[in-house]
Structure formats: structure tokens, C-alpha cells
Length: 492
Ligand SMILES: *Cc1c(COP(=O)(O)O)cnc(C)c1O
Image 1 (cartoon, rainbow, N blue to C red):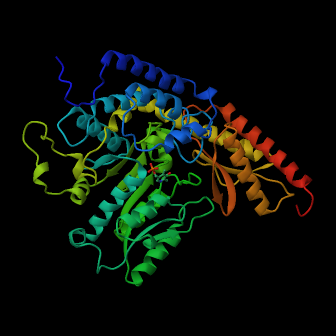
Image 2 (image 1 turned 90 degrees about the vertical axis):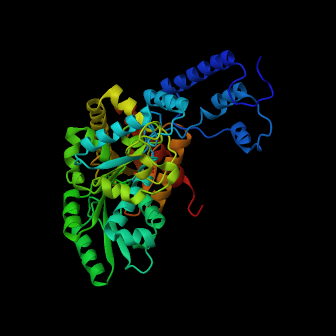
């Protein structure tokens, strides 16, 4: 006889729960399979707004009712990342096998990396694979993170401690000469945040000018370091871009590695966008010098199409990596046998203790597709972007705003009838209408001050025809807006 006075959270009726759970899975699979038939984005309707306004639920509705709510009111309204015509920001598309791996990971409720368990083995294997793919030496280490933002924080934390030494990590930065980090003016905003989080200060990130291809100027960098040393400051680290967020530009990583070596600086690479191009032997050659980095941050959830969240940082010197995060807590002491028998727990390689089992979806995806095919898919993304750039260049009404060397294109609609300010406004309107109509989702940026439509292709579902649709619609909207504007009476 079941004791009904005891509370618990498992279903009251397992067979009923199971039936509804299978239905829910079918809804999610339908959603995945039919991406192309849906709008690339749709605004959240009023009933979802209303649901999201509801107060703290004192009494539960029951699991079946909540399953229904999730399917009806949450599942249909994603940002659109999985759609074949979504190219905004740098967003991965996810995969059905990755989704199932997350289901298994959640079902196990595993906290990975800390215990003697299968998840720790899988995560360590993924890290070993990465060290091999990125040509890091033995003795190197790594850890899976929520994304490249956190991977940048960890890489730079290890660099700060390695360069400034033990007394800094114990006593803090007070009283030390101002420590400086160098990167190009295209560096991602997560590095600004890292400066703040690490106590280094945002204004101590020196943003060095870039050349016409948006790559860091090595001459300007060297001059800045020399000047800063003369002023009594302490140059600490260089951050190289393996694909900038604006245009996909790849810094001269060989050149940066040489400067870091000569100046005794930590060399960190932000490879959130391009790092995983090491999966393609053809693309990898463009990132020469990356293998000389002291630490590299990259994202599985961008160009490896893994569902959110999954990033990684690898560190050349594993001992330095562990020094930054090692603590002596009696309740975390390693025990020779049993669950706590873990040689190299993840919590001594990063700030988190409890961690999700992100490695499983990375592992499942790598095992099911193989690195060769994933690399070929990245090459396809690059080739399709070159196709798009070439079509833009061939149109008198479109302007390519930056070289499209990797998987990113920045362009705009142009007309000699309009001023620069009017062009900015018109292109912003095109962007909003493209998104609101659900036709396609580019995002925006500014290129040398000009408002740009920006397409980042980390989408395994995109076909070339999708780019034809984008261009046709951009021209359509541009001409329509141009007509509306020029037909308006003067001064209106
Ligand atoms: C996206 C991105 C980041 C931040 O990565 P998250 O995974 O979003 O935390 C850092 N650097 C670059 C170049 C990026 O594109």
C-alpha cells in the first residue's frame, strides 16, 4: 500500500505520464523536421505574454497540463536559430541528435566532471579530442563552458595568474602596476566583460586599430606595448581573433604569437566564430599560429551546430590552468575508490562546481557525423557565403561593406538618391521588415559607421536558394521603401 502522506515529485501515474511524454517528444520532433515550413521568426502572441505575466504558482497544475503549455505556448516561439534562413548574430542551428543527447543528459541528471561516472569520461574524451584537433601538446588541458564568453574569462584568468604570479592570485591586484590586455578594435564585447570580472578594468583593454581587412595592425600593437612599458605599465596578454564577430576577419595569429613570445605575454585566442574550422583541413590553414596560443576559447553551439549551451577553453599548460582554480576544501577531497575517486575533477579547471553534462551532445554529434563531414559542412557554409558576396557585388543596388573571407557577409541596399543617414534608416527598415515578415533573419552591425545587414552562416540547413530569397526580398523592400520616400512631399 502506497504511503500517501509522503510527498514526492515523480508522476502519480507513470503510464499516463509516459503516453504524454511520447506525444511531447513527437511535437518537438515535428518542430525540428518542419523548420522550413515555419516563419524564420514570429513575434510572441498575447496569450504567451499573458502566460509569462502570471504570478508565483502556489498550487501546481500537474505535469500533463504543463506539458501542454510548453508545446502550445513555448515551443513555437524560439528566436528562430534553427530555421534555414536564420543568419543573425552567430547562432548555431542545433541538431536532432544533439537534442536527444540533452534529453539523455537531463534524464541522468548528471553533474559532469566531478565524480567517478560515465559523464566525466565522456567530457574528458571530448577535451582530449579537442586538444588533438587544435594541435595542443601533451600536458595541455581544457574544460567545457557555457560558451565562449566564459571560456574567454577562464583563459584570461589563467593568463593573469600565470603572468602576474602567485602573490597576485593571493593578495589581489592592489598596489601592482596597471596590467594591460591588447586586442584589435574588433574584439568581442565578452572580452570587455572579462576585464571587469577579472579585476583588470575595462579601460585596460587596449583596442588596437585594424587594417582594411579588419585584422589587427601588428605595427600599432608593437608601438603600443613599447609605449605602455615606457609608462611603467605591465603588458599582460594579447587576445587574437580567430574570426571577428563583425566580419569574420582572422588576425595574423602567427604574428601575434611571435609578439607574445618576444614580449612574454599570455596569448589567448578568441575562436568563438572560427576556432572549430580546425575540423576542416582546408579551412584550418587559414588559422595558422592558433596552435601556438596559451589558451583558446571556442563554441560548439556556433559553428559546430550543437544545441545551446556548449563552449570550451583549452590551455596549453594544464598545471597553470589548475593553479588558477584549485582550492583545498575538505568536503571535496579525492578518495581512492568510490564516487569521489576522480583524478582531475573539472572544478579545479574552472569556477563552477556543479555542472551540466554538456559534453554528451558534443560527443554524440561528433560520433554520429564524424569530423570529416562536419568540416565539409563548414566548407559549404564558407562557399555559400562567397556565392552570396559575389551576387551582392554583381548588383548595382547592393554594396558589399567588408571582405567576406569566412562565413560572414556585411552589405546594404544603396541608392544615389539618398544621403548616408537616409541609407542607414532605410537599411534598418529593411532589416526589421525581413525579420517581421518571417522571411529571413539577418542581424545588423556598423561597418566604418555604415549601418550594415549582416549574415553569419553557421547554418547546416541553409541552401543556396535561401540566399537568393534573401537578396530578392532585400531588393524588393529596398525599392519599395525608396519609392515611398521619394514620393513623399518635400519636408514631410
Ligand atoms: C559569440 C562570441 C563570443 C561569446 O560567446 P558566447 O558563446 O555567446 O558566450 C565571444 N567572441 C566572439 C568572437 C563571438 O562571436
